Length: 99
Image 1 (cartoon, rainbow, N blue to C red):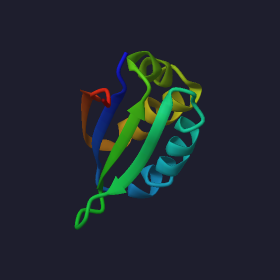
Image 2: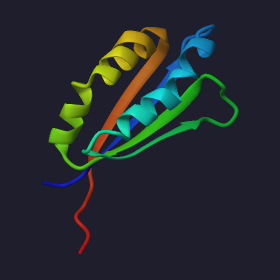
Image 3: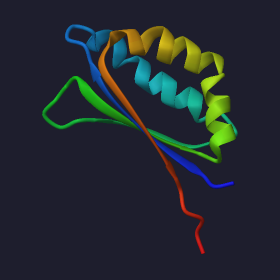
């Protein structure tokens, strides 16, 4: 079973920046406590204060599914963050095994 790279591109709806941005470090810290989460980084877009990307790496698709069932994910992502977004694009990639 190969690792999975998830790229989540979010744009915050105008006026919701102060609500969403403080939640991102909390989400990253909580995700990194999960045994199947290998990396979780948050980057703000240069020149666009409302856009950011989440770069998440999981040990497997099963680990990603487990992440989406955690209390912190459910509380923060669909509960707090997604309702305050203008747009959300998720991209998933299989990570090739290293030789």
